[in-house]
Amino acid sequence: MNSTISIDVKKGYIIVRVLCNITVENIDQFEEDLENATHEGKNFNVILDLEKADFLVSRALGIIVKKYKDCINHRGSLSYCSPGKTIKRIMDITKINRVLKEYETLEEAEEVFNR
Image 1 (tube, helix red, strand yellow):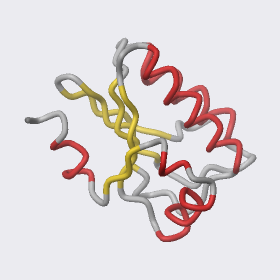
Image 2 (image 1 turned 180 degrees about the horizontal axis):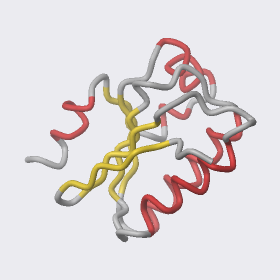
Image 3 (image 1 turned 120 degrees about the vertical axis):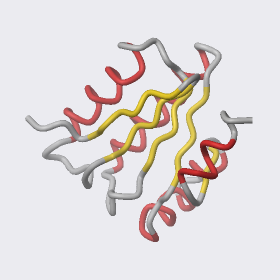
């Protein structure tokens, strides 16, 4: 199965780019990809770039929150950036945006680590 994400390793953090909508057909792959993204490099500072995703099934939200907790437990962080209108609304309705930091752009999210 094709990867649902791409990873860009930076100094002190990684960018995880979601490459497609996350649906019931690829949710297991998304979970595996996201898990591998942090554990392979032992990097727990994550920016989740949602620019290319227009839709996430509810289970994807649970996976993201679980990964957030994993990052926090390893003294890291997980934030997200570039959400489209639909995902922004989902994050608002579910109140995930009160737990995870949302950035309008990837550049804005990266500024936190490039200070």
